[in-house]
Length: 397
Image (cartoon, rainbow, N blue to C red; front, side, top):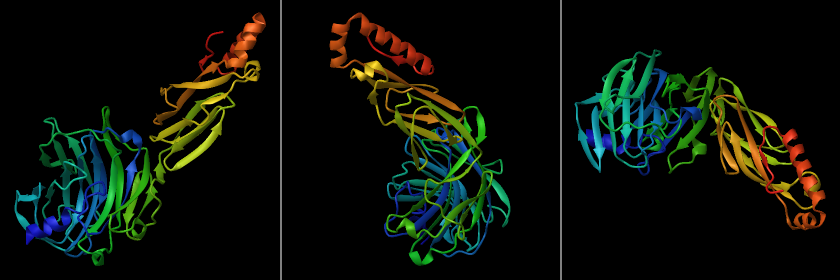
């Protein structure tokens, strides 16, 4: 009975990036950290324990997690999941193994729990559940930390105390760190109250040490058998790097900025007759000519030239010459028309263009000789003076 209950619905109650057990509903709300938290070596958050009555067959889970570069997934937090469970086990290739003792978990018993999924799109997983009351008394705050160990393993720490070590190959993350409030159940009739629970001080381990996220972005997920529009839970920012998630909380659209510590300036330098657009989060705006734009700290900004070929300004343009986009240079470099810039400081990028002399200009050059050479030289000097930040490549004169 214990093993059937565990496999039948705890395998379901992992994030939406992993496989859903057919017919069992689940909902999530949460917050992604900024893009600067990608490729982290560990994650941490403080969670306030909220203990309340639940029902056997329902699973409430509040956690911090990371999608890893090799396609695996790791998470750590606390859960309320009444029923009989093995406290440490694994399900591999459809075979479940219990590595520890089994207990009857009470309706209101909040316990820490970690889970590791070798393939976040698969069904295999490892997990461990703490002893009774291990998430602390109702209303108390506790830190949950996942960090790669010196022996290439994952270490789970609770209030700076080592709880458990998982000897698998530790990987850097592929996505931003994130926090989640999750509800799943063996039937939709058990989808009821979820928390609410507060999360604070989401942080990640960078090569130069631990650092807090600078921005938080909302997400809403749900099981494939139900509509996300029916998700009854929400997430809001209370103040700096402090979120509340669960029942009775407003639900923003996914990819909405919940909080940021500030904004950095992106300076985009292009000729004044060039149009481009900047995208970040769910926003996209069109600009023309050199522009300064404020972007939430730590987020990616995507800059795209929308007119990669424009008429050359001046006499050459009147003869049919066109300027063609060549590259982006500056704090980020790319030969593509779209460039991604990480806004963890004020950034500047400049466009590089090459002037193409079309057939009418070439004919005039053969006829006019010295006159056209003078026009080309004059154009080059004017562009260099007007756009000191751009390297304007004009081609052969």
